[in-house]
Length: 212
Image (cartoon, rainbow, N blue to C red; front, side):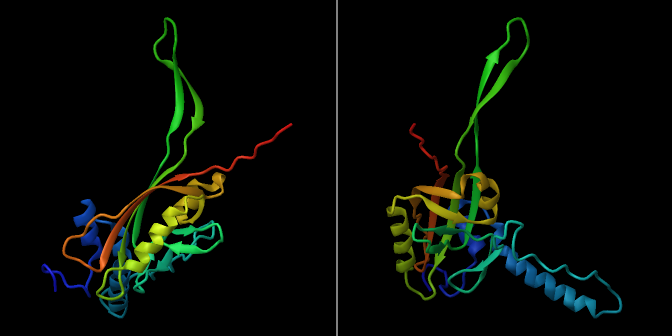
């Protein structure tokens, strides 16, 4: 035990809250499912209560992307994210939450003697992707190998593929390519076998240059 925290027990939602100031619901998904299943199974056999059967969960999205994956510790993650190197090898990012943001460039032209403006869409900007995650070592030591692998991926400085349910939806027209713009490893006080990380990525649209 160090500073009141036990290394073999991790409340990932609580760690997220302490590092970034908010609770990450995806980490509770598997626990919530297990609790609900236990409750349903318990009450289904009761004569006093009756519940509709629990629908079978979907394992893949409509675009054939997995909804679930197991992290390094064997725990299930919801909406996992894989980054794909140019050689097609993949890295599964650990215990992540993500956000996708896009903006349009719009030119507004005032009208003479009229209220309002004429708005013309000029372009659609790249998608900005923010990923926050927690790398948890399978032992009581610092997760050096996983942190090194993530840093090496960042150092490649190349366009990467991405596989995720939401990225497959929003980046469908950009061949699901991204570049890593920044990587940060925040400190987690009192836990030596957990490393938080934050990444900012941008979508990358492939262009074909035609010379006539």
